[in-house]
Length: 79
Image 1: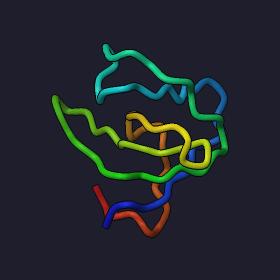
Image 2: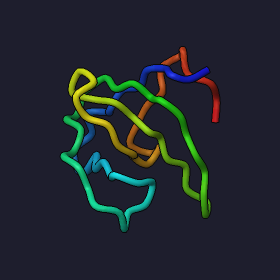
Image 3: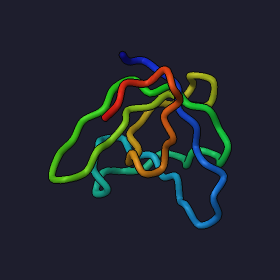
């Protein structure tokens, strides 16, 4: 169940962009650094995309990121 933990993979070329709302048209927040561990608060699926609401920067930042940019750890429920 949520919350659970996830990791931002250290893959070159990924933008790891975080948004205020679960939409790429939403204003963005600062990207999550590659290799970071994040707290996944919940997910939503809409129009064929799945988004995670995450906390990062030791809980100082919160926003939404596409699920393809997060590796859920074993404590997370399956999508």
